[in-house]
Image 1: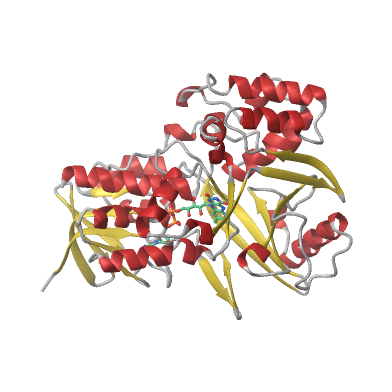
Image 2: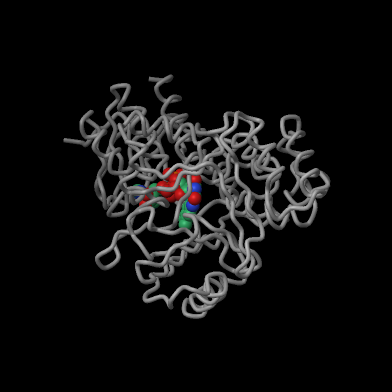
Length: 438
Ligand SMILES: Cc1cc2nc3c(=O)[nH]c(=O)nc-3n(C[C@H](O)[C@H](O)[C@H](O)COP(=O)(O)OP(=O)(O)OC[C@H]3O[C@@H](n4cnc5c(N)ncnc54)[C@H](O)[C@@H]3O)c2cc1C
């Protein structure tokens, strides 16, 4: 008996899971084939000795409307799953606070106005220029073929070096994971608009209190199971069968699963590899090969349990370490997750060297802390696609030239940088396009 499924999803990251939930919610049974031993992809939990941590510290914002919609649908208790707080950026230079930017609980746009006017660590000129930029945000738009770098945009908007160094620079690296002189101003503006021009709560920061696996992949698996969908772990799809420009089946070595609709929700490098042998997909593969990748390093440092940050998240200035998260929030007191985003000299450093350097930076900013007791450094070399200038011109749509074959993932054309929100939006959009066809 041949195996036959109406819809097969290759990859159980957040895009694949979002697509699966959307289809199952509309009574379309799906099978998710995931190569790893757990789902979640680039936003997953891992087990290290007797502790569960994440492959990388993740931060969510109030504007992630598709993520929140998905969580509501599958019954995630958001209050339990996240610590929610108004956007508060505290940057330290040495052991001094160099910026304190806090968005108060006021209706938009007063929240932004007030945050800029009351920010500590900015001069009067900085504040005036930031306000001017904020006022121009609604009208500033850049078409995909006229894209410029974030650095060029900020300079043309007369943003001062202090504003770029302390505010826009850290926000750009955190959101786009791409250096300022290469990052796409088009994507940056879209991110700022979604975060600051809607409701006040859109700019809130949400830090997971649970491990990433508990936040979405596990509740998704329960939801799918109750509705006739299933996730098969440890199933690496090795090839696609395409005939007469229509998808026929996916193969896992000798196992063949027939499907009339297949969503490739693997990372773009893998999806390209799977499509590359098929003539009608050559142009699309050439497009995907241009996307590029940026790394993210997460260094976990375990200190004695009483060690804590002054607030759950602190940024560091002029250091390799960019952001430090206090994992007390997730019930792991004394554990700090230090994030280093995008390319840099840190990529060439050996693990020991980088660990010592970052630990020394933290010791300078927090001189009262004792020495750390354990460390774990996780390098995600392909953490995100590169949100560089002009990238929106080559991001693919969900639909491919092969009938029944679809793409989903953070890298598809959704206007956002590589985020869980971009992944979920892409997955849902893809599922809705399939529902429209079916
Ligand atoms: C360290 C780090 C920190 C990050 N921080 C943030 C953050 O703070 N906020 C934020 O919003 N985003 C963040 N991101 C980005 C976010 O995690 C990603 O954008 C998102 O998870 C991408 O989801 P995806 O479903 O598109 O792709 P993926 O997560 O890559 O999912 C693809 C899935 O396909 C599977 N797969 C691969 N090959 C095959 C195959 N042949 N057969 C079957 N399955 C296969 C993979 O195992 C994977 O599970 C971060 C990413 C990293 C790595």
